[in-house]
Amino acid sequence: MIPPPFKYRFEGDSGVDIATQKIDAVFPDGERRRVVLRLGAPFIRDNVFGIRSELENLDRTDGPLAGSESFDALINGIAWIHGRLRVFAEKHRCTYYWPDSNDIFDYSDYFNLT
Image 1 (cartoon, rainbow, N blue to C red):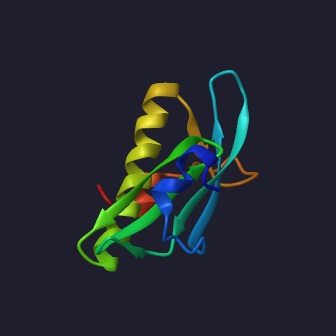
Image 2: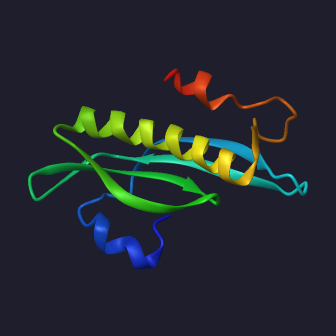
């Protein structure tokens, strides 16, 4: 979901999600938070391909990310999610798990970007 202050950035976005993945973020104080990784369908605005990439319930929506073509925008969206998960884990010392599980969600392995 795009927070209202950022909606203008996504003009042209159909609002259709092409991929989602739920995970749980667990913080040092024991808080467990359901997070939805979300990619929107690439869209064209001002002759640039954009994509909405979100970590719902963890990090604010930013962007949109862009690419030279729709496939490039998609790759950038996936890489952004991976990078934001890493930065957020380092900053807040949280650990990611598969939903309702004690099995670690290894985002580097999942996105195979290492």
